[in-house]
Length: 130
Image (cartoon, rainbow, N blue to C red; front, side, top):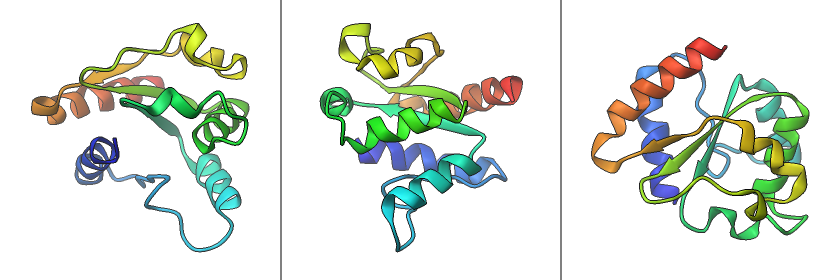
């Protein structure tokens, strides 16, 4: 959900010195596809927030989440799936074949009452892998 993403982004903004970009709220005016590609190119880590309904549109070729993930994979970005409290990691049959490489990535579950703890764990993981 957007609230889940914004809560994590807000905590990250207070605990890191890097830019925190949220695709739905950080895009400046201009061409959305171009701005999105530029943001992915600049990022060191792409957090793929998975909440209820996130996977629903991925079967469509024109889905923006799908396009974003495909581009990040092409750019060989570190992708960290983050799962909202009650959501399971996707299975192979829930993802289009071009997103199957995501199944090899380690994800992290976030519990609402423990977002700060989850962020600390996430930051340690990211710093280790960069």
